[in-house]
Amino acid sequence: MGGSQVLQSSPSLQGKTLQKQALEVAGAYQYVLTFIFMGLFFTLLMVYLLFTSLWAFSVLYLVWLYLDWDTPNRGGRRYMWMRNWTIWKHQRDYFPIKLVKTAELPPDRNYVLSSHPHGIMANGIFCNFCTDSNNFSQLFPGLRPHLATLAGLFCLPVFREYIMFHGLCSVSRQSLDFILSQPQLGQAVVILIGGAQEALYAVPGEHCVVLRRRKGFVRLALRHGASLVPVYSFGENDIFKLKTFAEDSWQHLCQVTFKKLMGFSPCIFWGRGLFSANSWGLLPFAVPITTVVGHPIPVPRCLSPTEEQVDHYHALYMRALEQLFEDHKESYGVPASTRLTFL
Image: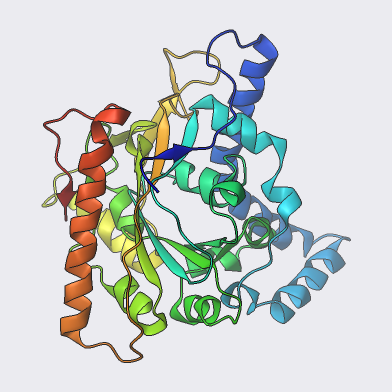
């Protein structure tokens, strides 16, 4: 396919009614609140109900959790009606978020969509791959996206159901091998390669990706003969401000240690206020996010890839990602002098 293709039906930024603006704010804000508080809220609720006359609800859910424990490692449980919720279109329009296609991804094979950067909450990736608000199913017909996330999130009551309904699955090896081993081709595993570590570098105006020593996704692609596809979300790092610490500081050491123990990084971040752009709060800044899906890199199937093979395709991938960034950066507001930094 020559050139980029964008399929996005959001209304113009000009002339929005107050009602439309309010709905967009609600769409963006509910994502943040859900991301931060939903798992904790329902965990505490389940514990609280155990000591009330409604204890049976908690017990029944715990039984369900035990019986359903392995579902996140077996492709999850998605519902298209939730991926098509209108609230996701309002969230899309708030920034706005766009999805750009630069090459065909035929559904006669599987893919590992390696995404960068993580940002604070991966707003662009969730909007484009966990909802159909930007018409992913029309841009890439026949592909079935699975966003891989921390296995620990599937231990949180109710929240685990919510994220599975949107197509999320565990990032464990068992989970990804299961998806890419399905007889039906067109499986597209989406992995945020830098993960929680990369969130510590989500500084507005900077483009740092944690990739140099991340090679598990290449081994995954080689084991299944799945094509590697670089994905970059311009603007993802710009929707929140982040407090950073020097790498030799005790604060940074605490962040890294916490991340090793819990799987995610505690970040000090802030956006704008809910009712005023001049105050701070948890509402993201309305900065455009554009997720660009690059050209696929064919990868042979090798059940036991050697380190030389892994290093070869890892180097190919890094060059392809850098080229994708260079080809599109100026179109999406990044100065020509800016370079992608590999950590």
